[in-house]
Amino acid sequence: MARWLGWVGRARRAGVVSTMLALAALLGSACGDDAIVADDAAADVLTADTAPDVAADTLVTPDTSDTADTTVVDTADTSVVDTRDTADTADTRDTTPPGDDAADATQPGHCTSPFVYLRDGQLWRGDAPFVPVSVNYIFDIRHTPEDDYYIAPHSSFCDTPSGCCDTRETCLAAARAQLAQIAAMGVNSLRVVGLAVVPEDGTVVLDCAHQWPDWLDYCPKSAHLVMDPPDPRGLALIDDALALVAEAGLNAVFLAGHHALDADGVKDRYAAYLTTLAGHLADDPTVFAYDLMNEPVYELEQRDIDKLSAHAIGRAWYDAVRAGSRRAMVTWGLAELGAVEHWDPGVLPMDFVSWHIYGSGRWTADVRDYLSMFLAWPRTQPLPWLVGETGLSVEDGGPSEYEQSLFAQHALDTTWACGGMGLQWWLYRDTYWGPTGRGFGLVRRSDGAERPAAEVFRDFTPTWPRPACPAPAYSGSAPDGTFLTTGRLVREDGSPVAGGFVSGHKCFTGGYDWTLSRADGTFELRSTGAIAELSVTAPGLSREGAAVLCGAVQPGDITLKALPLDMRTSAPSSCPAP
Image (cartoon, rainbow, N blue to C red; front, side, top):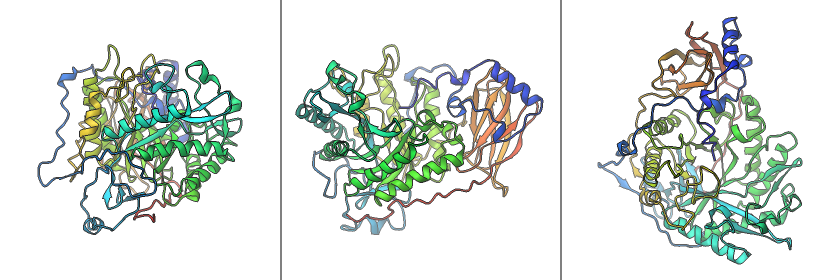
């Protein structure tokens, strides 16, 4: 999950560092990668000062329905069936998009493969587009004093701290019931969380649940399952979880890794594990993509890595998956726009991007506009994309269930209108985590009842042609900022860079404001304070700096350089062999 509380207020960081930067700039600091002070800018620029909250009842979700010549997606078939060895026809949210090959592609019998594939920027399964309408679901691995392991629903999904179950049989039954509830909500896929390997003592391991109650503490470090080379018990646990997913008629994106897997001595072991995992599941159509890392800007050891080093890691991990499977796709779960400064989707070989996008923890006009702005941006970039995490937590004294449903409706509608392939909500059910952030679920933990936002998912119907993507009034963190910095981003051949990321470090007060370049490469950075220097970049291009000297100069044209990258990918683009 994105550090959704952490980003609130980081841009307001004040103090001596900013003043020193401004003075250094005035003394003639160099402009370039080496002159940019690493202050975890990729995280800091995610926020900025916002206008006061607007009453929720003034927020009107844009009407994204298309009344003219509209093809409506087939509604969900929520029956629980085993789809692991047969073509799955349950709730694909399918329809026929425009395109020269649409007629041929939808002829009966054209594709009988159960494997999801990627064609023309859209996921397909069989003869129809597959639109992931998803939730994040967490499995636990439980370990007993008798050294037995089994799969369970995440203990925090249960209505008491003692969990939903206490034996292998009751835990499988509890997970089966929860997944059936998910399918009945019109959800057709999951992002499977909780079975990702983590680094430990120079290798990668599957750890086990040890939250509550006391009996779950039978998971000492010695019980963690080493996965390079893989412990067969670990692979069997993953098999058990995915069998439940398939039984519910669902597909999955599988989060494969967590935490500092880029560390020396670990990253190669993770690559070996990816090959083993992908090969082990190569003939199982349940998992259509591996999410190689959750929010690297927060979790990896090298959070402010240079782009070429990030590319080398991404290249090795992509190739590791492809060595195990020709059919599974690769994605990364990237947190917010600031990711382009370091763990840039333009330098990480992948088949599609999974963006994690939240708000300030409230539902206001500012949050709505921020979501709209963010979701419009990927249209300027070459990679297909979906939303891998988003959500709003219902809190005492905070957002209501009604406001959460408005957030969900806006996120689904705008993602679809702006070209996203689908959306994965965080989370299926409330948790015990907290004190805040416990109420993200579409289902209440206390009684297992659906929230109004669940009905939004059940009723969501993608249509072709897609509705118009709402154009943001301003793309940036401080739309009401009164300090202006202008310039233009260009490539080495002089062509404009659209959708480039422009971050300005503020003089004296500290913090950052940011904006995006327009189609012609020009930008207007509005900020709440004078800017000392800029850090600018764009997916697949270099990161450059420019001194602004607290508004004394304007940067003019800033040239972003092409990087020597090997971005070859080989996702299946036609019906995969069964």
